[in-house]
Image 1 (cartoon, helix red, strand yellow):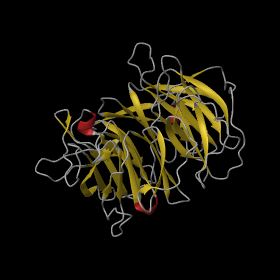
Image 2 (cartoon, rainbow, N blue to C red):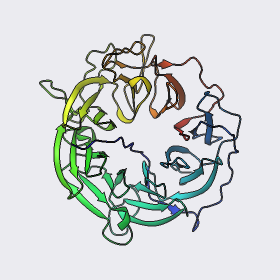
Image 3 (cartoon, rainbow, N blue to C red):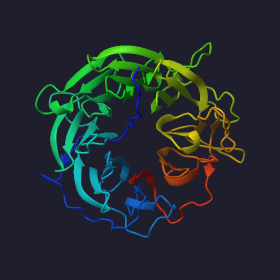
Image 4 (spheres, rainbow, N blue to C red):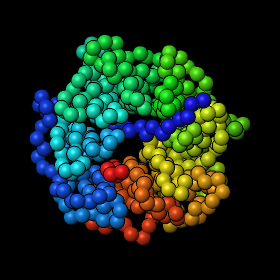
Length: 436
């Protein structure tokens, strides 16, 4: 089995309509701060924009935000981190917009109006092109849904392909294939970017179970597709191999517990080497069905984390109880701490317990981190949805946006560090480190 590389799936929408034939002039821009290790954070309320953080010292410099639409939210960085793409999903008073920020100058260099909301944008490995999934984009005579190709050097569309209800995208290591995942579908759209606009670019492959994401072997011959299963209206959550040389299906492993009545779940995943971590909430008969076994909590339903060995396509560890909700954020921080976040979970805020949508799993096999034992799960005392998790690579901290606020976690203790940023005021959505 080939070695598997981490491929982070960026959940941001697609399909774009330009405000002009090229980039539009930004209305405002940030100044050059001179910071060497920066994070960008989006604020969706006035004064809306992209704010800067010194990611080395956890200080917000007193600079004006970079303009990026009326409600800037999710961000995607190009692989070389020269550009940041910012999505502003519209309201009844504003348009859907993609803003492109030059990271070196800390300024917006263009903006593009989108024909609908987006949750997924992927970028080619060389940073020259972006591909956006727009599930509601109108298509004449067919169901809505397209994937748009955009040149990041010119800010223009280079083509589009029709993929009904496409919501999520994954791109391989070479940039030669994109896999598209649609709502309420058991098929994967295999897209050839070089054929977009000039020939047959999409091949549908059936046999999946509500697929939502994919990860790729180092030689791009195999995709490991995450099937969401019952949580997304299907049957059984699993990991399914897809042979990309001929689009045939390979081995499959269900991500379930071994209880007399197995519980299966997997809506978000992360790959580290040949190990895949999958988080989700089991459903049966349309309702959440996993009890909070082993946890002292007032919550009546929980989620599950499953660990899969992709080299052997076997489950290494199952039945790891986490918070419930729809899990769509996952990141591995320092000290082997895996942060898992979601939305619409069971929230508890009483004198006895505070609980929201964040779980921290200790992946270390023999080391206790803070109060988190090997293989243990810690639920921080914080409420609200988790919209972003960003480990700070040069340090032992992780930035987490929960309930529209930024929290800085010390991965040596799995607790909020004493120093937090107090001069950041707003409703924050996403945070990204833009420097290597």
